[in-house]
Amino acid sequence: MRSGKTWISLVMWALFVASMPKDAEFLMVGKTLTTLKRNCLNLLQELEPSFTFRPTSKSATLYGHRIWLEGADNEMSENKIRGMTLAGAYFDELTLIPRGFYYMALSRLSYKGAKLFATTNPDAPTNYVYTDIIQNNEINKSVTKFLIRDNTFLEPEYIDELEREYASVPNAYQRYILGEWVLAEGLVYNFTDEYLVNSADEAGLNPNLPHDYYVSIDYGTMNPFSAGLWVVQGDKTVRIREFYWDGRRLNQQKTDEEYCDEVEKLIDGLPVKQVVVDPSAASFIASLRKRGYKVVQGNNEVLDGIRRVAVYLSHGNIKICRNCKASILEFGLYKWDDKSTDGDKVVKENDHAMDDIRYFANTVLRYKVGKTAYKSIW
Image (cartoon, rainbow, N blue to C red; front, top):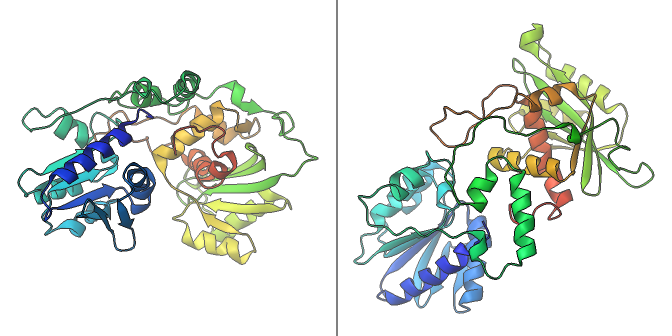
């Protein structure tokens, strides 16, 4: 992370494109076109002003060569590049690209002298990038590892601060600072008493200054239903109340309307700015909207959300009131799946309050905190 690998890889990529015959065509890939533009295309244009790109037509031009631009966020994305003949391909954050797309692109590199360039941060050691490429001695490849202290443009104080920040995030120090391919294991959060308060006042929020209220919800019928009420002031927030209902354990299910009643009790007349809901709960979202609430679907990024919550806890952006018993219990039970063979996965148990907190952090708090806590991730 922040090692300068994208910069140097784009320099290498531009030199390679310039060396190829004029009839050669190329491909640049990101998880989405938006991330490709943000991470690579804008930077390449700064490095080489003659580089032009048109996201609407998914094409670019460099030294007279046509470069196709694609996003690959699911396994079906490979259909986008079938039939291409390529002299080169560039992948941004390869571990985020589906395996099938990578192999389809590899099969398209039939032009003489073709090469594939890729950058990535480490992931789980079960990821195909590690097993099929880095550890595979049967293929022709070159792997270069850059660490944060290799980037001579960064101030030492900034690097020290970043290392302290990542030390608080599960597994992040080993991966993003040391560049190691390690498996996530044990508890997801290192949750301690320092994250608990008795009230919003104790957390440093001033009731006489402007503040907003939000609700976050993970919806469940047979599975537990979890809702949290948050007060937000500046870049700090406190979960002040919650409602948690385990229909299976209590042997009593609730309807959407009954859950709406419980949410109204939780809010208790407070001027809630927004209700962030499990994106899969379409009928429940419709019921809440009928009652006049402004409802948004929660951002369901799991791994990024977990890291975001961990950083916000460690920086004091999130506090939990001691009366929120269900979420406190889940913080102590939420585990990584150490049997997963498909990258980092969490055990799908004791995760419902964890999910509603993650929706809130991903959808609301990331814009409140901005770069106060984050210097490098997301």
